[in-house]
Amino acid sequence: MLSNIFKGKEPIFVAEIGLNHNGNIDEAIAMIKAAAECGADAVKFQTFIPELMVSPFASSMLNEEAFMKKDYDTINFFKKFTFSKEEWLRIQEAAKKYNVEFFSAAFDIPSVELLEELNVRLYKIASSEVTNIPLLEKIGHTKKPVIMSTGMACEEEILSAIETLSKNGTGDIVLLHCVSLYPLEDSEANLRRVLSLKEKFKLPVGLSDHSRDHYAAMIASAFGAVVIEKHFKLHSKHLCPDSEVSLEPESFSEMIALARRGFALAGSGEIKTQGRECNTARGARRSLFAAKKIPAGKELSMDDVIALRPGTGIPVQEIYKYRGKKVLTDIDEGLPLKGEYFEQEQ
Image 1 (spheres, helix red, strand yellow):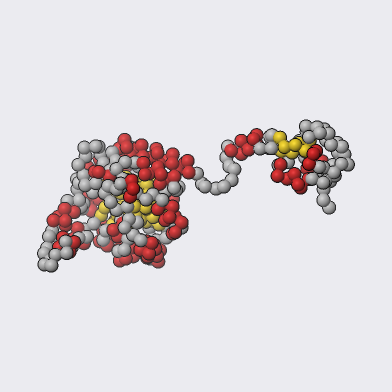
Image 2: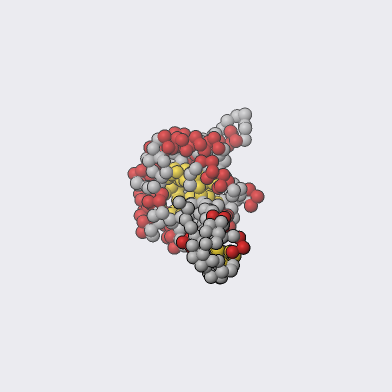
């Protein structure tokens, strides 16, 4: 369970390292250290085999060319960001050293098998894989918690993914609101979708943020986001694939502070007096007092009572419960009324 992994902490902050390590193991480890130092709870990577991700005919297909020709540029691009099993072990050990949770988005079945060899404790499902049923089945079989981004996906596709994961053994699922644009504009952020996902699917919801800054996290947290995932980079001049939507350590720390405050400000949403407000209510609300001396044997009338602070006696809203009841003892003017002063119903 996510609550077990992160000891019930909410919200959980994930530094999305993704491809920003540039395929450099030392850079990846430096990013883990920096993410931990600025308050991240977890570091998330991407695990894939490029040949199992992109067809060599992708360019021709996307351009709707009549003659299909192979183009390996995209495959070769992604090859620069892969690690060997030994390198992944080093990355995992670095995460343990710096006390952050290591996990990854798996994009193919062999990558799930690799992550299982590493014994990861949870999985990320990228927005692009929400409809990849065989991959979801494989991840479901691990019976481990899943954080799933929902960019590009409609309700039916999200529901199908949830059902596939659940049917195959994964019941602990967090949905992330995500807009699959890099970067996205404020008008495209649609943060109210956090609320819609919670209401529709009755699951914990978070945010995978592709905006340029860190303010979306505060709003999403106020809407109840329990996971905040944000791309991470080492510094402002760090050249990496997702630099434009990534935060450097200082900004990441600011995001965490803002999001925690947003989460705290939102509260539980329960419609009741709670905590310190109860003390305010005791002093500010009103109770029933004797407006004048009330002799024993008199039936209480509205003229006999006055509503005054504090609210520690008979609540004013109970006046009609006592009106017309016989008073059992003399009550001096100004004294608070008590239940034992009145004849009780048999």
